Image 1: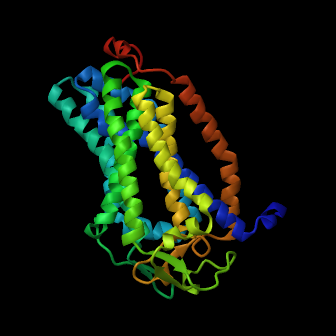
Image 2: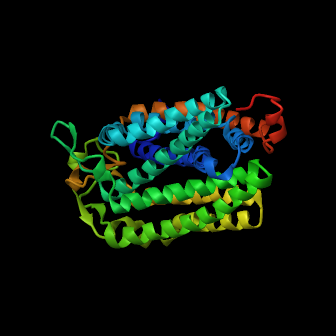
Image 3: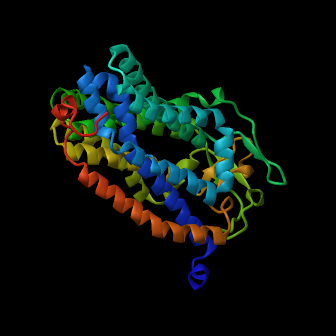
Length: 384
């Protein structure tokens, strides 16, 4: 209990905001190349053996990579229950589309090789393509909508009402953010294929990856310009107590042009975060161009880290702004679980997260090296 008392409510809220960011970044980096490889499957591989090589480049690890999505969703549910309630109910159809894609992916992995008919396998290949594209695009669209504000409101008894629609999510800025997400993960998937394959597949992945890296730089830059000129941010206008009760209605906030760039103006060092997103994509292009596999994959991962974290840096302390009334917006300081809940979760995370990291590191160490096309064709080992 001494440690519980030492960690203030304000500290635990900030720690869990950072941890949620870490889990979301980990998911984008770890499962990102899986989704990118799925989108590249019909294009980087030209025959059945090549497609099996591409599938087996992620086959042993994709299930483990999705653990980060489960951890992120579970952490949001426990640490920020109001955020979970609005996001998973307001974005219900979008979340459903994501889940359909993620559910169809393992089905495609398992059923593709059940029959040798070319038409059968081709259909499942396009399912893998769609199960990579749809979640990637919708995740980006969701971020675009969060930056603009989400149409939800709170009653005095804290009941949440969402007044938007699925097609309302598909506005120009959100679609632009979705395209950033697609280009970013195509770049990451290409770098992964370059690392795990050789020959014609690796060369095709290299070509697609260079295009995706350039597209990432251009689209991310365009999104930043659009955010500055066309999207108003939010700011808190009342005194807020970081250790106060979890009641968003106790504050006041307003829509304010340029608010999402306030932290960058106050602390120029924060410009390093979006700069990492751009520089990482440029280095990924260079790594692919020079056929430096490790430079490409590490640089593409760094680009993802910078792009994802730039959203958090821009919005802090907002978690989910309300476009109906800024006062309803959820922030780090007024939408969390109780002090005790956050503390218990932190202790659990301190125990289990290192175990997950250790196991994940061991798996990648055991499975290092390139996929052997001869072993697949000769049916040696367990291959898709």
